[in-house]
Picture (cartoon, rainbow, N blue to C red):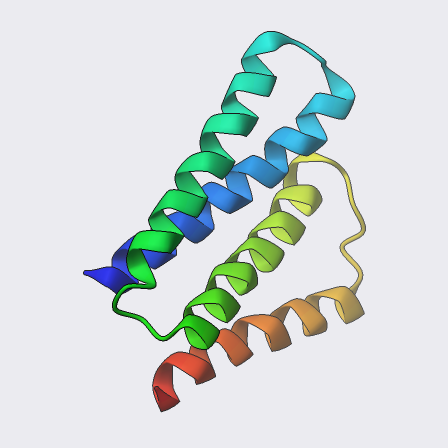
Length: 104
């Protein structure tokens, strides 16, 4: 269950990153509230999952989900580069996070 919570925390971090980008496009109260709620919830869930998951692995997976999710959201919704080299490095981050789970 802690792993599911950790993954959900990473997804909320990704949403928070998207809200940061959205804030630069459209500055309003709704975006700010969503930004605060997503990061607050993400950190709360991360803290809860780290009661069971080892800290080094949990934090690495949480940040990995945020990095990969943020990059994909940027490419899909904010017209960021879709260069193949960027995709290779995103895949490397993702494979590192999966590798950490496999060896833990």
